[in-house]
Length: 280
Image (cartoon, rainbow, N blue to C red; front, side):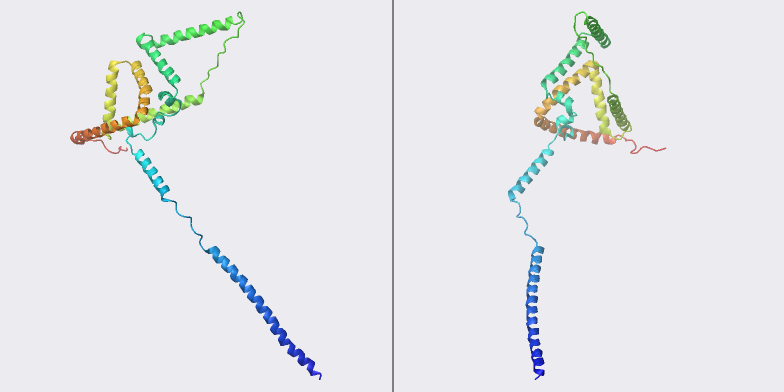
């Protein structure tokens, strides 16, 4: 009779073990479901996102048309191979504004002053040294009388500004002049060595043209003519740019044809200098 309780306890333990196993199995199944859901979420994250829809064909057509128009505009013939606006070719800034008459009053004043100087020295026969001396005599005499008479007439004396030429300005001008002179000497040396016959002919033609102009007018008149040309030709060219470039292209094609004939008949028979300088 004493063994029956032990037997009962031994029979109850399998039931409790089976109950615990069921609970553990349920917990394991639930955990497995969460893992599968997390794996599915990770897989969804790894999937590539749909790309944006392609741009409409109209935008690409507009872009290609604009690019073609810009390329065609860039290929238009310009005089002297110019690829920049005429304002930038003239150096930009205030000098280019004066030459292109951006401010009519300033441009007219500069051109009028140059014309007055030319009339004074060329037509009236006034000399530069005489003009400078007479101008200084008149200015100094007037300021001297004004400064001494101001105490008698109860007026303030003239305010004469102090003029000081900055060192940087003089150095920059000197460096620029030196650079241009050295470049001109280098070009003349290359021409004298006979390496570029085309450049040689251009320089000879330019010097001959200057000599012809110098036989008809003096240096002052030549400078005034250049000054007038700078104030008239650029503004006319900017206004009628397309028409002038069209005629210029036709003329340039004809010049190239004539130059090819001249090169074949004359220049090809002229002996040329060595390609490299000899080093001693």
